[in-house]
Image (tube, rainbow, N blue to C red; front, side, top):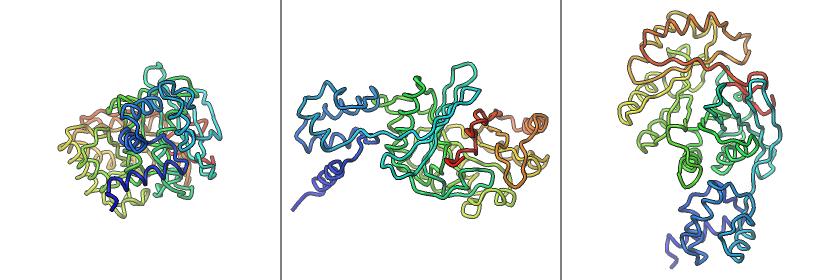
Length: 359
């Protein structure tokens, strides 16, 4: 009778033999595959390093591997990469990339390269889904039909492709593009682990941020598994009724249970959490809104990123600089860091809330 481990090994090999991309594979998975071929474990590490650390794109570049092994890998696996459908450049240095699935399915998703003005911080904002499962009223992605989760290979390859095209390395990765990362939890975490692994892409855990609109069970899983990455919550309103008006996720996960989960994150993992807050005049920037947000912030170790509205659905308008300054002033009694994210890339529809492949 075939053992369970051998059965899993053969299943993996069949998946590879069906033309599976090696991108997105962990070192453990590569080791299992190479072991089933009678190869030593160090060969798996050579492939792993070649894929991610060295960014090889053809088997000819894997010169540490023998010709027979390279031939077998070429015949039974692939090094496919995402197709770049569109590449736009902003006047402020931001660049937006529209990718198509490696399978040529016509499913498109976007990533954004965001350099800081001083050239120090270089962020890639990546997507986790094609479209989104949620319907936040201020977000353009929500207007697209949800077409599925991205595989870990497609998530990792966004980083590899963007860095290759811009000719530079990111200092930070944020899962804040299209989709709800917590609804694609395991692919997102697999990709984050590869981005973090010193033997792969090697970004520090504090330079990788996972964002969620408030999927509480995903946050609880994140805490239970002690994921080492930053966590950001797209809050956008400080009371239940107001939040429900602009974010349908409030119907499933209430604001009080979300705040409790955020408090537990800071207590159990002993790390600061980030609240993202899209500022919409007449909707969530009143004096009472500010006071409620201050009360929330005082309950835990957090920082607040305020973001001027970038879309104009329902006749909403972007706040003036004076309105932004006044709202920030009202938040100061919270005694927490407050950052105004000034929406780079707005001229190419690359700013927060604007990612939509049909834009």
